[in-house]
Amino acid sequence: VSSVTGLGIPELLEEIHRAVEAVHPRDSGGVFRMPIQRVFSAKGFGTVVTGIPLGGSTETGDLLEIVPLGARGRVRGLHAYGEPVDQARAGHSSAVNLTDVDYRQVHRGMVLTEPGYFRGSTLIEARLRCLPTNPRPLETQSSIRLHVGTAEALGKVHLLDAKSLGPGEEGFVQFRLEEPAVAAPGDRFVLRLHSPLETVGGGEVLGASRWRLKAGKPHVREMLERKEAALAEPRLRVLAEIDSAPLVVPEKDVAVRVGLSGDEARDLVASLMESGDAIAGSRPGTTVSRRRLEDAR
Image (cartoon, rainbow, N blue to C red):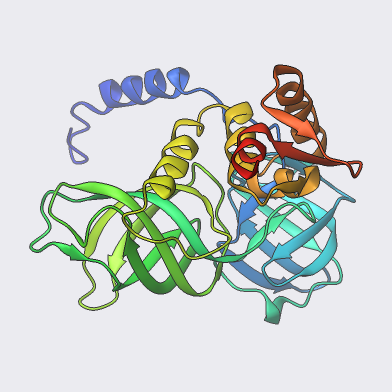
């Protein structure tokens, strides 16, 4: 193409339109979640946060929460691509005007979401793939910068399969961060060294950990393999979460940890009970993994 003569521009536009038509719209079901890109105060309106929602939708009047800050406010107004709209949904570049939230407490990297579904965590499990062009192996406990959503979190990477990963290699890891970050199973991330500032790889988040994972343990690898296999199937994600939880787990906690609405998680838990993979706990609203129960026995 040439921006001077216009050579090839019509053909380029045709290819862009053809590619756009082939893209599937992002699913707007599930829990609303939007990593915050910018925050500012608009005169006469108050706090405005912008970003691209990763899931769900929100409307004027909805109550939303900023995680991990914990501040809550109602949606006063919505814009998408610079125009007023009645609804902001997954995949649309959006601006959300919030009441009762001080813009000075909010910053890039936080997440705007439905209350009670997402939490910040300093322990995150993932599959890491190192770039084949890395000049040196990545050593366990290296100081890193984790880029997930719009957040840049400092911490250390703990390799769970080996003491180092060479160029082009991959394996399970646990990020131990200095401050909580918000990430859901299936989120993509980029990993850089703290110093020198080199990009070393990326991958997919498997979930937030309840505790520090030990390297070289077969049961840890088995758990992470189940979580990885379940990324594309919500029912299997719920089962993997129940299997890795303490013996009895509230259904609401399952919904929070897999990023599903309460009704969605409840229906999937009921399906697992019907198949015999989960058992109802003695307290209403709780469940037990059959696998964990048999192991305990």
